[in-house]
Structure formats: structure tokens, C-alpha cells
Length: 523
Ligand SMILES: Cc1ncc(COP(=O)(O)O)c(C=O)c1O
Image 1 (cartoon, protein in one colour):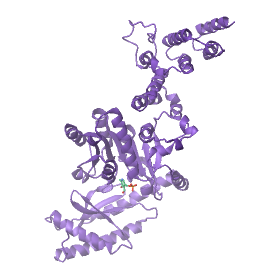
Image 2 (tube, rainbow, N blue to C red; image 1 turned 45 degrees about the horizontal axis):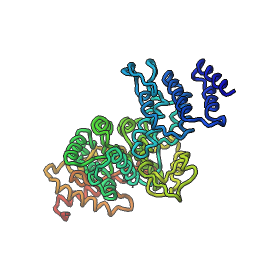
Image 3 (tube, protein in one colour; image 1 turned 135 degrees about the horizontal axis):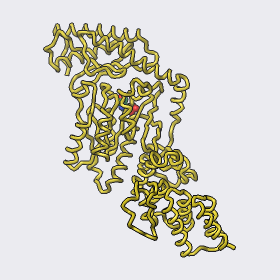
């Protein structure tokens, strides 16, 4: 009876080799009807599946049959690697003359690569463990983004890493630290044997101090590429400077593995040229992870008119991770820092530590996301709720108009500075930040030290108005200066006018005393 059944199934498949029910029934007849299937049977069925795959490489049923046999008999997928690989290539050309009965090649006119083959090979790499994950990741990515886009969500659901993901972390500093740890794991996995002490983090002279702190915590070198002169013109790092730094460091035996770039530096609001950096990394240094710190200015991406300046195209195309703080200029109270990663698998692979007491059925099955593997701490606060409340109460348009209003108010202040003959910009106004100092037109010969003394005295004098106005100071390439940033939802134009009045009056008074030689020089 069973022999007849098999012949029947074979006829069905001859008529239509994509008949999924026939494939299922064949599996039942051969493997599940009760009698034990021996080695010879397994060999036959493997050949049968492969011949059918060869005839129609995109026939998912035949691939599933192949998987079914291997699963049923506990045979590792890796035994089929040499069969599968030709089906993952883009063409079968050049293989026409090769005949391999055991591992038949794709038919001549086959449409390649076959998505099922890519998936199969990704599974083979994933089974290898950590060392195979970068290859598996690339394959899953190519499936989700190119060869099997319709199943993208499914691939993500299966937990095969990939795909972008955003996680609300504590701070921009923690977000950067997390990205650096993931970048380090990616680099050391791809370059086993590289001594940890030769790894080096890239930041710029204008990156927030977290870059150097992260290096301290991780015990790694850090290089702050000097961009102090460039930020006076509003821009930070570009590809040329990056190329030069990488060359110098690699010649010296060091291994740069991450670049922390900034959109809107703390000090001056300067912007690193993300598209240029990303293209340079892609072409010359693909081992470098690109983390974009947009902790402050990232919220401007909510407004279409600011997206070009805020480097959206470069971020979208090249960034491996991006941080935007909602607790800075996003109407949310501390702490609330959104960290986006292009490939969450790299983060999880770097940080997944699962002792017995943290194992769960769903965690083991990979059907839940374990956020504890995305950062150092085990527990987490429900920070996204805060963003939800902000967006619910402001709405997207409300949020956008808040950002626009801050920038418009900042422009009001910047115009005062521009029109004044005692102040000057130290860097071009950036979004809602103005960086300025006293540099009187009447004193063209004053040198840097004198002007710094003058401005330090000015800043000190401003402190006596602390009830109404607190201005933070900074230094750019040795130039001491003041920063005024608009960010509060309740700030109005009259506040800006009041701030300007105080700033101007105090500056005029300090300048008068400076000219009269009545200012104490400061160190
Ligand atoms: C551009 C930028 N990045 C990072 C930080 C650090 O932010 P956090 O306190 O969230 O670590 C700041 C804070 O001023 C910042 O301006």
C-alpha cells in the first residue's frame, strides 16, 4: 500500500513540483508512517530534494523538504554547505560544465540567488555561534532588504538580529558607551587576535567629554581629531581628516574601530559631515562603526526644513547608531535618551550574558526581546511612556512648532549679536544656539589673551544676574566665549529681549572698566 502511495506522490510532483501538499505527504509517507527510515532512504530523499531544488531553485517546498529531512534525522545543516552556496550566488554562469550528482548545481536559467538558499546558509553560519554571526547577519540583511523583502518583518520577528531598532536608554553618554562596546565586539570578532590595547576610539576635539570617559571605563585609547579651527566655520570633521588619522594610527599599529561623530556639538553646535564621513568609511574603512551623537540637535530632524543641515541623508545611509536625547531639547524630563542601532543583533551579541537564573522559556525560544542585553543594567525604567505623553499632548505638529519657535527665538538673539559692534560670533549660530564673545570693533588690535581676560570678566559679572539669566561658557581653539541656547517651552520673545538687555548692559560696563584699566587680569 505504501509503495503505491509513494508512486502516487511522485506523479503529483512530476505534474507540479511546487505542490506543497504533495511534498508534505511524501514526508509523511517516507518518515512518519511508523517504520524506521534507514541511511539509504535518507540518502535517496536528500538526492530527491536536491534534484528538485536544482530544477527550480526558488521552490520553497523542496527547500523545506530538505530542511525537514535534516531536522528529523538531526543532521547539521552545515553538511549541505557546498550544495547550498552556488544557490546563494547571483548567477549560475561559469558552472555549466560541472556536473555533480551529489550536489547538483542550479539549472542554467535559474533565477538566482534563491532566497531559501540564503536563509539556509544564514542558518548554517548562525549555528557556528559568535564567529559565524557577522556572516549570518550580512545574509539576513540581504534577505530582508533585497532578496526577500516581503518577509522582512518575519525575519525580524524570528530574532535574526538585523533591522533597525530604537531603545530608550538613560543618557547620551550611556548610549555612546553601549555603541562603543558593540563596535568593539564587531571589530574583535572580525579580527580575532587583535590585542585589546591596540584598539582606539575616534572622537573629535569637539565631541562631548563622554568619548574620553568611555575610553577610561573601557581601558582603550582615544584620539580626539582636532577640528577646533573648522568649527569656527560651523563644521566639524570631514572625510579627509578621518583618512589622515586612520592612516597615521594604522601605520603606528593601532586599530581604530569606531568614530563618534556629532551633529550639534555641545560647545558650538558644530556639525560633522556625516555623508562625507560615511562614504569614506564605506569605501576605505568598513571596519569603523559610525556612531552619530545628535543628543541635543537630533530633535530638529522632526522638522523637514532642518533635515539637510542635521545630516539626515548621511545618517540614514551610513550611521551604525544614532543618539537623540529627549531629555535635552525634546520636552521630556531627565532621563530619556533614544539610541537607534542599524543592527540590533550586534548590540545583543556584544552584551548577551545569560546566567541560569535569568533564563526564561520565551527568552530561550527567542520570541521576546530581552532589553537587559542592550545595556549594562538588568532592570529598566519605563522611559518611553514619557515620550508617549509628550507626543500625545503636543502632537507631531506641536512638537515641530516648539522646535521652530526655539530656533526663531534664538535667531532673534543672534541678530542682536550680529548687529552689535561690541560682540562677535565665535561660531555661526547653530539651530537654537548662539556662541559669542565680546570682541569690540573699536579694539581691532586686542590680542587673544586680552580678549579672553575681558570675556572671563564679563562672564563673571553676568553671574551676579543669576536670578534672571545663567549663561554657560566654553572655549573653542583657545577662545573663551559664552553660549546662549533656547530650549524651554515657555521662553518668549520678551525673555530674549530681557536676556539681551542684561548681556549688553553688563558687557558695556565691563568693557568700560577694561578700557580704563580697571579690570583685574585673570588666569
Ligand atoms: C552633543 C551632546 N552629546 C552628549 C551630551 C551628554 O548628554 P547626557 O547627559 O545625556 O549623557 C551632551 C550634553 O550636553 C551633548 O550636548
